[in-house]
Amino acid sequence: MVYPTHGVGKVDRIATEEIAGHKLELIHITFEENRMTLRVPVAKARSAGLRKLATRKLFDEALTVLKGRARVKRTMWSRRAQEYEAKINSGDPLAIAEVVRDLHRNAGQPDQSFSERQIYEAAMDRLAAELAALDQTDKVTAATKLVDFLKTV
Image 1 (cartoon, rainbow, N blue to C red):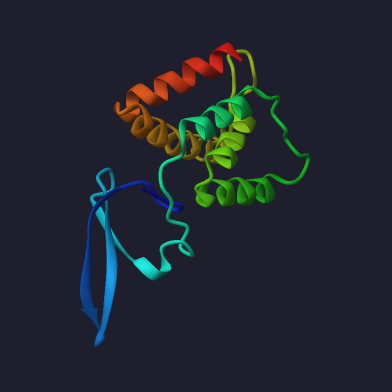
Image 2 (tube, helix red, strand yellow):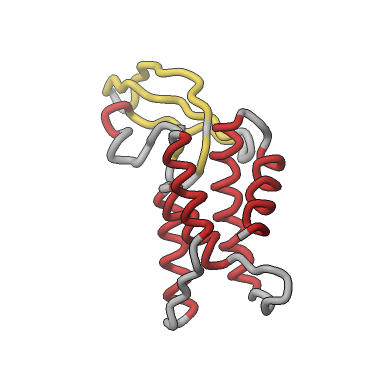
């Protein structure tokens, strides 16, 4: 499963628990990288943005987005940074691919600022995690695959 603000996690179980005198059916999602378990009420799963992994078709569309030309608006960096963060936290692979595309630097291009690099790495990490889950590999292999793909663009 994918939780928008935390990325790819594994559903451990769905259990009924009593919280503050109410019985709730909760989805327990584990995020290995953060050593975190999230409990989301089944009734709120959709509104919380919880979704299944992207299909291969949707991920191929995200790769197509990566091939496109970078669209860097001429607005202040702080405004663009907020937009990029919102796209990453949306959990949408297409939006995350846009961030990677816009912030990717090939050799010979000017260096990125620290905050640009952080946002780029966060987007790349999120995209690689979903690709790794789709390909049933590890995140390092998926990230290498994405970087190699970006070099061919």
